[in-house]
Length: 237
Image (cartoon, rainbow, N blue to C red):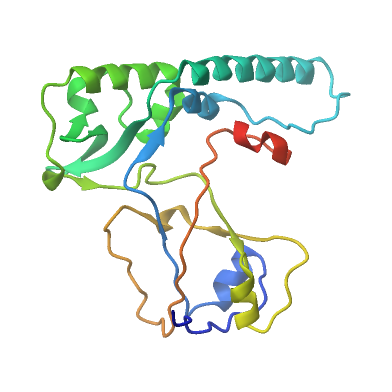
């Protein structure tokens, strides 16, 4: 398999500095056509920011928050064990209207029609938690008709996520291509939420770009606000 052209990037700096010194490169994140959601995942989006490594001397309020978080972990575990099958929630456009739906084998169940009481954006839907999941699942099970996929344009499931963080120099071959040493610590940079596009959407290349770097992307969706999470608890967020 031929190697891709070497993109002569300078050393990684902050996101702001990187944007100013790399005017001739372009990269766009592409996400899957549907977001696989289990009911227990929805509760993550509802929780306040939680410091898993917070010191114990922050007072009663921190102790209370920690207890609430522990209780929520137990609650989520029970939902997970209950074992509802995964449900594909999509953001789609049809007839010039963008809304939420459930992807079935025979098409898309329009939640605006079959469950109009639900939020109309993915972020609001996720923040509603398990109740939204249950109502969406019930609507999808009862819906007698769907919108054919041929009439729909699937968008990114969460069209404007709050953060997109990426790891640079994350495989050794690319580091060797540029004759650089392996970094001692992970190198992170930020992407703009507007870089998110849906399946099959065109990747717009700026006219000033002379060399386009490309690579496969592996994304990990974090559905719960947290910080300082130890690796043994990473599966909880």
